[in-house]
Length: 220
Image (cartoon, rainbow, N blue to C red; front, side, top):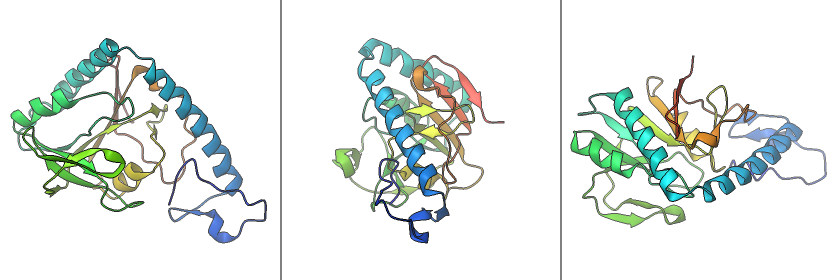
């Protein structure tokens, strides 16, 4: 398992296995330092989310939705992975409903096996929902899809488009296995900007980033 908050420290000389994370060979001290930094930054960003008034959250979600509409244009027939908001993530469910009504095939990430890539299951406003891992609502009747567009919630994002997430590594494992042509759009609050997350070999940069102030950046 890779978890940014779980790097271990036995006090003894590391063996080769201790330098393998998700199949990548890394320096243990570097990974420990990066993990400590990310954990601290997460706590700061979670606190900022917690303090955000509901009307401000709603306004941010509306700006992002407008940018998604402009960016994607006609979504009829397109397979788009979105997300069910947790831990203060911006709520784009109104946009998901509207996109579905315009003919998009919306799907949601579902953890089917811990520490493995997620699957994306088809969702409509009429879908029966059940509780999945971490009590997150997921479609009760699984119909796996392969999205051509993935809208990814982010906690932080750096100048190179690398995303700071919740620390479980599920999105990174998943995005690494999608087609190169997949459009990856990171979305988050306007205070998500960071200089760097100190990206590791498994981190996947966003193709585009849309933040709550309506700004859009594209990875060059």
